[in-house]
Image (cartoon, rainbow, N blue to C red; front, side, top):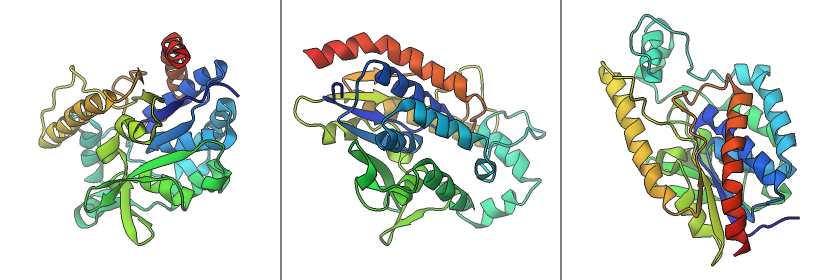
Length: 291
């Protein structure tokens, strides 16, 4: 069965999280299975799928199938066509396009651009409508309570609803109701769940964390208010992940560049990037597990 003496923490990052699949490939190639998985947002989804299928290649096949499906196309992620703007940040493109569409009205009068129905369908399909009791590896999912901002870990209950909540980006998707309480994307406060992985780890158990968060682009100087807000969020997120990373024994950083979270256009490239970086870390991880 392989060595299970580690907890695997998979961070959030939208399309950049496809690199997690490459990390899981590398672990499979070395017959290394985590004793527990904790995931945030896209990391929670891929962690759940791996805990269900116990095979990275099966997970990749199902993900690739969904990325070309009508359900995914109907998700309406705000990765919009270029509008007449010099601000090339995601927020800049969104704002310019929204002025020409109904998104502008929804953004000004509501708290979300879309509901979570399509995301529910996708998660149910990817996980075969399974529950926590159908998983072969213990799974913990992060989500943030709305509006208190408290981080909560879910390890039982409605698996699909917990996964959707962990991916419900505020402003894009509506908050998700779990037993009468509303939750949003775990990445708001826990983009890299290394500290939380340490909390659930047994004494002496190794923590492996995978960071697929965005990096600030030094060549992109914002020149609008929205661009500055986008930049400030990236900086804050970057330093929060650096703080969380200190709780990991092994940190795997596929360095996904400056790709936007909503960009799923190069899945094979992201998967291979994750695998390559993870393979570089395998000797260090194996030595740590053997000590």
